[in-house]
Amino acid sequence: MAFVAGNRKSMVPLRLHDVPFLLVASCFVLTCIFVYATDWFAMPSDVYRQNKIERTPARYALDLAARLPVIALVFAGFFSVTWRPIYALQATMSFFVIFTGISRAKFKFIREPLIFSDIALVVDVFKYKEIFYATSLNVFFWIFSFLYVFGVTGLYFYFEPHILPDSARVFWVLVGLAVAFGPWLALFYGPVNGPVSRATQQLVGPIDIKKNTVRFGTFTSVVLHFIIWLGRRREKIVHELSVMLKSALHDLWDPDGDSEPPLIVVWQSESFIDLRHFEVKDLKLPNLDRLRKRAAQWGRMTSVFEGGYTLRTEFAILSGLQPDDVHIDASYPYLSASQYTDVVWPNKLKVAGWKTQFIHPYDRTFFLRHKAMPQLGFDHMMMLDEFDHNPERDGPYVSDQALTKSVIREIEKDPHIKNFLFVASMANHGPWEAGRVGNLTDPVEIYSELLRRADHALGNLAHHLDTLDRPVWLLFYGDHAPLLKAFADPFPDPRTDYMIVPLGRARAHSQRPVPPREEAPWNLLGTLLRYAGLSKELPAQ
Image (cartoon, rainbow, N blue to C red; front, side, top):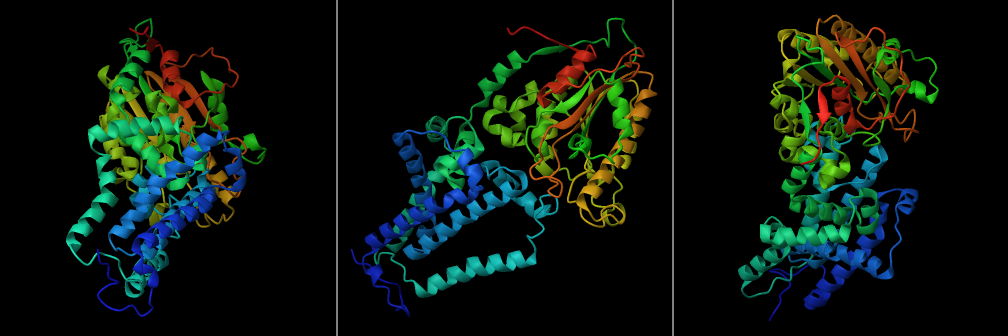
């Protein structure tokens, strides 16, 4: 079979292209060497060492070999659209370096390497650059990216000749594309997906993002986790969970038969953590302190994640499920929210005749909440478009005080029905930059002032709830520690604060303060319902 070096003579003779098979093989080998040599940059060296696991030589060789098909498919992708092996070498190396660099940048901010579900957030990262601390993705970023991708590609097209066979070119182009992209498409085909997913799960073992990044490198780990997620059969798992976690909601509020319908308010306070745990002396949070003394239970909440990704804590609270229960879905549970409808608390309450509301003063599409929350059982969503918020006038986020007023109005609309409100605030979210709060410029001082304002709003909300002539239960908690690197990086203790407070008719006047108790987020709603006499665990059937 004859091979040509393109339709025109290259300005720089590349004799290597006269032996195309050897050239392609050599470029692929160099690509693999480069990828293996750079994969470890995804995390700092000390973290990399901490997450190494003991492996037999055979297991180590298997883990290394697992990267080869992924590298080969990426290399084949670039090669199949250009038939230029040196270009495929450079493009594949750049591809893996970009993923490794993104993983390192992500770890720098939230101490987690890149995972497959982050791909689903790409659009949000560019749409909400500030909330992802990605303000560097500006016009200069796009200019540089454009020049690199199209400029370098253009240079290769000009200087490097292709090695496409001289005869039956269309056939070979189609073969190349099928080889490069066919395996990716086959993953979505059931008869292929099932066995591949099971084999991948057996290879990977437990879903540990850091350890798997060490074992397989960033992009290969992303691919393997995606294959597991894609092939996960959730029906049986959810059925088992529904039996295990089955509970009944009483029609009555308490054994005495209170005629007034109960009200439950869950307030998820963005990035809220009491800095007094860390020897900050000049911070006063009087309403938090007062409510702790009246709480049925309070203390530190086990962290689902060290910093960021509110939806993970949010889902743990709403579902009552541990990360291990939802397996690969734990990193981005709202991608598969519909699978968990029957086992989450909002839907249980809805089925029992409660009105269920989700109130969050931010874009309804963020984290796919506009799709996930109705699937989890919320009747109504009140999102940013229903708030009178002007960023230039009010700052980047709706204040907790404004949010409190909206929550109170929603409660007063239906005072005679069983009502469950889940409120997710935004006011404490970073970045904590100069101009955010008056004349303050220090990030720690700005964050501390936001805590004071959150405490003030909490006091106003609790005061109103306490005046209601109905049983009221308030669950207040911080979703995760702030990414406040000016204070600590990482936070010495990522556990946040929570409290379950009886108010209104639920308040026991003779109740004495209770000692703090650590609690996991997936236990909090079930614990509240048991305190309220609304839930009892039924034996598995």
